[in-house]
Amino acid sequence: MKIKEQTITLDSLRFYAYHGAEPQEAIVGAWYTVDISIRADATLAILNDNLNGTINYAKVTEIIKQQMQIRSALLEHVAGRIANALLNGFPAINSLTVKVCKQNPPVCAPCTASGFSLTVER
Image (cartoon, rainbow, N blue to C red; front, side, top):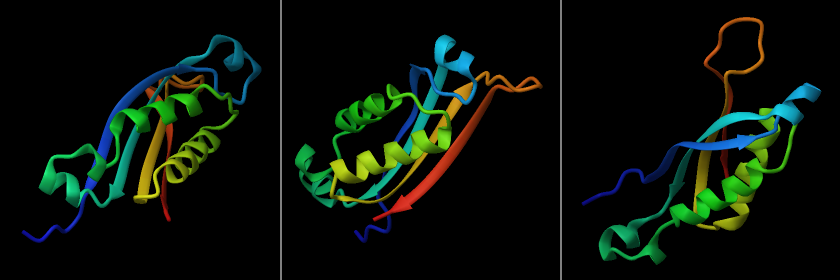
């Protein structure tokens, strides 16, 4: 078997947080979702069924949760912090995409979510 690409994903992780540019958003808060797509070599896990050969999903989620608890004015900043924390926490990560979405954002039109997506590589 020739492996072409390996991607770990966590979709629609849900957090209540207090991000936003408006002062009221720091008081009221909102629901956010985070999607993460990680490219890393998981060949050992494929071959040996061993957690040591891949990225631990629970630890990734914990890092994201910690970053979501730190208030920021902008989703761009939140996504950047998450990306940096994951790269620092997992040397095996080659690249990743993180998407942070605010549910029901306070904009002047009906809107299900607003978001920012960031792709970085080592």
